[in-house]
Image (cartoon, rainbow over all chains, first blue to last red):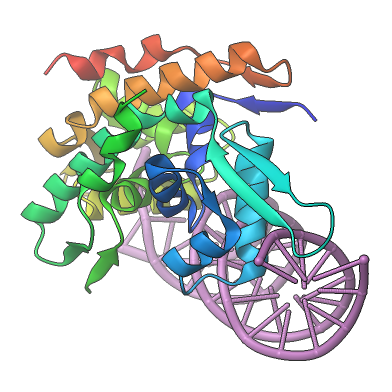
Amino acid sequence: MKQTFNNGVEATLKVISGKWKPQLLCHLGNRPQRTCDLRQALPDISQKVLTQQLRELERDGIIDRQITGEQAPFKVTYSLTPLGRSLGQILVQMSIWGEHRASELPDVEITNDHGGFSRLLEN
Amino acid sequence: MKQTFNNGVEATLKVISGKWKPQLLCHLGNRPQRTCDLRQALPDISQKVLTQQLRELERDGIIDRQITGEQAPFKVTYSLTPLGRSLGQILVQMSIWGEHRASELPDVEITNDHGGFSRLLEN
DNA sequence: CAGGATCCACCTTGATACTG
DNA sequence: CAGTATCAAGGTGGATCCTG
């Protein structure tokens, strides 16, 4: 179905907004991962929401989904597409800006630094 | 109150996410504007939501709010802070990325191009 | 002119249980 | 192991009316 945005910023926000998407992009930026790997990396996400967020990223062309095995148990591996990798500069800059702002505001805290996204810059 | 984010991307998203915030930042990036100017620029926003989004941007240190006049009718002028202007590079890059993606996907349409944000790059 | 107060609809996320 | 189905809760945006 047709999606209309007022500007490119809104279109980009639509793709990367989602409670777990920045973390998913960070982990998948390091290397392709299986579902169980992602669940281990993000212990607090429910499997329903994990699937949901991954499906949205897949539908938006950011990640690929590859199935291995014809019988259960399956292996499902997710990896970034070239379009997904092309978000690297933006994610790193957003991460740095957020850290800069947090450094000025005592009540904003950030757990992991932008180094987690740096592998996205290796194309 | 204390806000904790897993990474800087989430912190940045928190600030610029909101149905009308990208458009508000675009307009305020061109020049400071009064409330009635913004309502004219964004005819479909209700005054409640306009006030709400502006208050959030103000609370997050992105815009300044200045009141002129001691009796009604007041004049309220909003302008970007230095921190708000420092979002310029990110907004332009996000806008360009969104346009690039839209150009590859037939069902994604973008009304205004990234030129609207370019004044943010003049510091 | 600018914005506060209510009340409301929707969307996103989450808890839980179940399937191939 | 990976994913679906159902139901519930909270937050965000919106319609409308009212105030200094």
